[in-house]
Image (cartoon, rainbow over all chains, first blue to last red; front, side, top):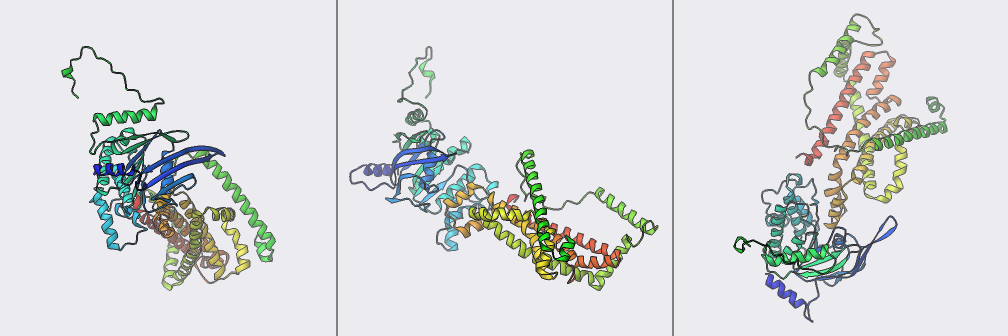
Length: 287
Length: 302
């Protein structure tokens, strides 16, 4: 699967490449706060290919969530252009599904009904609708919880419902705005793996916004590091590792350090100096 | 004001309404600024009421029973003139007689009919306007200030104007009851909708819910606790308004008109029998409203 994506990626870089699925061109965004202009994003350029998994990382306030809102169409006041399939983005469209940091489920609807919200604009028969919802309940592993209300679910389960709601209308692009940020570490790892599995099965193009360098490097094919005030691209790090990746692997660790350094540091990446540890026998070190 | 009504000096009546409204507005303004200064904690959710009526402790019955005994004793031993205060047994007897010959029940039917019709008209209008103003900022800016100014006019200040415009008949009563039921539901609906979570509103936008879907799936369920609290208040206001309307515009029967007639004939037993009935109906309506509310907002505790 990943080999296929890499091949597609490679093909996209050729001269006669198919156009990217999503392209940001010179996107800038300025907020007005108390009558003062505040530049949130400056000159953001990015192309996302079909099937690619992109992560945007950066410190809080670097405009990464704003970028996502622009792509979803929740905010239409910006300069530059955002295209999906070569067509400029006009408002909110069904080919883009979104999952927010908080699950944002409707508290008065149960799991099934909440997932069904994603199908409101689809012309389906009652049976077809129920079948689709059930399919996605299965996908996120919530069989048996169909008639539970959001407050009866754990944080991880609620976020699974939100993911199912974002996916049920079969969008071509899945947008994730720090979706696992509010979860505990164990649940977060579990959901990250499930997200990878879902993506493996559907081949959906994914754009993840996060502040977690580990999450970004573990999940994405390319990591875009943003610099704050105003938000602009500092570096793009290719994660050329096959899935499943080893969370504790050396290669991933090195890339994570690189990304982390880009987020926090100013200069180029410096390898930490190797210090000799005296009096430690090598056979005691287990890696 | 009463002589104003009799002489049809409507300018004076309007002036009085204005004054009453202004005093009400000042009081409201002062109270809300005081409230803002004193209250910091978030308001408890209105729908989170106790779900069933807990049987009251028997201690609560002691005082009413003692008073009842004192009342009965005072009339039995002739401490009080029977024309001022009849005995509880007399009231009970009159209640029984009124129910038996149908006069009390007929009056009650007329009154309840007015309450429900007024609630339907006034409450319905209040609900619709509340939805409109809650959803649209433009209409809020256009209509909001006028409506909240109008709200400050104490309800009974409308009586002279309404009797001048609509007479003393059924129409005037209906308008009065409708007016009483309008504001609680209007305010509650508008505030309930305006205070909906903006995060959920954004999610609804991202899911591309159109207006009918948004109303059915987000706005009305989300504002339901507030709307039902308003409905409960409207129900009680409509009932109070009915009694007031029948008292101030006594024609075409009704429980308060019956009371007025009984008072003029010095039939205190009938007056008190009617009072007992009014109280019972009020308590019943309040209970009904509460049941409706907790039923419609089951998702909070389900």
